Amino acid sequence: MTAPVLYSLAGKRVFVAGHRGMVGSALMRRLAGERCELITVPRGDVDLRRQDAVERWMAANRPQAVFLAAATVGGIYINDARPGDFLYDNLAIETNVIEAARQVGVEKLMFLGSSCIYPRAARQPMPESELLTGPLEPTNQWYALAKIAGIMLCRAYRRQHGCDYISAMPTNLYGPGDNFDLEASHVIPALIAKAHRAKDRGGEIPVWGTGSPLREFMHVDDLADAVVFLMKNYSGEEHVNVGTGQEVSIRALAETVARIVGVERPLRFDPAKPDGMPRKLLDTGRLRELGWQPRIGLEEGLRATYAWYLEHVARHAA
Image (cartoon, rainbow, N blue to C red; front, side, top):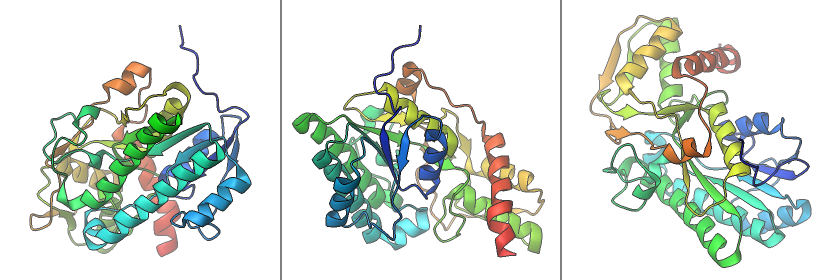
């Protein structure tokens, strides 16, 4: 027997913060089927890093539910190059939106974090209880610190103000709308862009690090479905991991991407570049117990993402 929904989105005014990003766009697609009124605001109209602007907009629009997907994001290189931006921007965005939501009486808020919140030496797979048990991975600590602060702010507002604010921690994401800029991208879009370039121009496919780290990857449409599921079916102080439970080495991932792109150029691993955490796999037992499972396999998702890249990125760069 299906458990009753704790919070219905039907008929609600729902604000997706960061609606033009990869995660926000996926949420917009998923929420289109929830019979809710979606409200958004372009970055050019309201800078979420500006407290006064956020509070004025929230007071004028009064959403009943909020998905906080807005963030300054990027891979290892850009995290290391812009630590101040990653810490300040993300702290400002989350504190402004969460406090403004409290002021206008938002019924429910979902804060989206990242699996990088867990310590570098966390036990694997990483359960939610590993939070704050050790030092962070240096290559993404600035982003991780901001996301940890967001989790704790949601917990604090739940305790002090009775706010129904919850947090979800996605694993590594990929899919349509990803950032394929090699200076700012994560590993999957970077590999797709490099493999496609090698197919067109020749040469090797450069890959950061040794290829040995193990990673878990989730298609962003699966993430959006899981987040909407949690919004409707979960209410608790503890954050919830969102992942697939499957892992792959960076070497095997790079080989798969090259095969999907259709290129036989050799992979060139660069051990002088950082590997990041040796292994990063989420324990998603809590989410499974609540009744949600992913549906998009890695190969299927990579093929769809490459097709999107060809249509929306490579086509316009030619």
